[in-house]
Image (cartoon, rainbow, N blue to C red; front, side, top):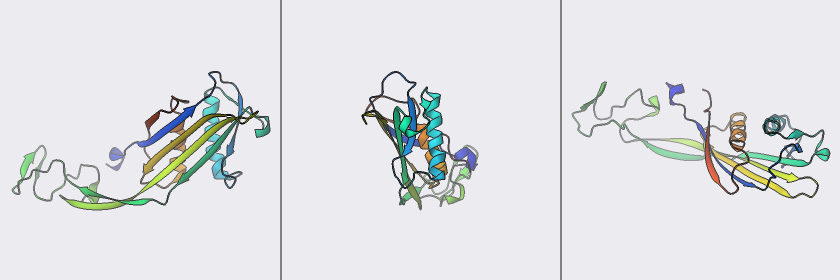
Length: 196
């Protein structure tokens, strides 16, 4: 039931675009934060961005100094914030003696075990809390010869996961969905949920 209740990963993506219509230019992916440069984790995410750039027709440069386009990449996740929500049974009948709906007879405080949430529900009018984390991916593309900015993109998502190895690839996928997008437009993009 957990797999059936899994929800898609949703990211809000905003992009500002001045890229020319033609592709085929050479590019290099670099870390916007010098502390990330050379790291194995950053290298893994940079490789994902490189593959997406290749898929849409750009060419990988042998080195940043030889690239026509510089793609700078940064990512982060906050420390999270607590969110409190009320649990309720959407099928609850407001009479204390119960009512009949489909396969179950509902009485005060009863919850449907087939609804998402399972044991985390505390019955009618209960509350629960959990931590929500905000993750973010920033990507910029500059023309190497003069430093002119050609693309700015930000993908942001809120999730109960703080696992960057899950979050960043999904943010990359969201960033490149319908790339480069319409300049200034903010869109919500859904990708696959995290596997339990």
